[in-house]
Length: 124
Image 1 (spheres, rainbow, N blue to C red):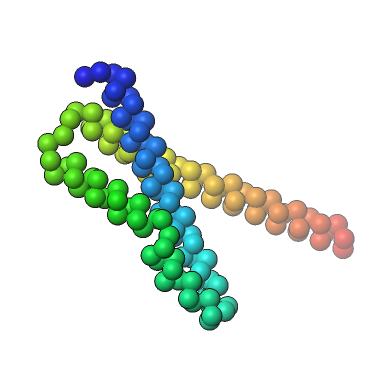
Image 2: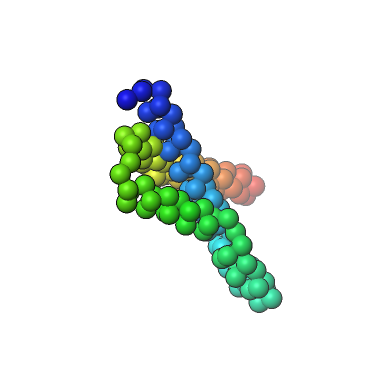
């Protein structure tokens, strides 16, 4: 097995999976924002069905699932194992990114609260 082909397959699996996750998360965030807008403006509820079907997120997930099924259902070359190894790196990486962003946000909010409390004590 050619190492360049194996590493290329792993990198392609990583990129493609990361792209599909990106589109799916963007789709979910769009639905979240549409639901919040619907709560304040009932006429905005027309945007929700369009988001469910016209957005690229669900179609990328369906296409990716179809490709996965096709590859796993038929005999495949060994390079596909490297492709899936690259794809398997994406969920833990996204988990690490989310945890990092949440910690930074929590620290920033704590610093802002401490600054506001200190400012109010200085004013008194």
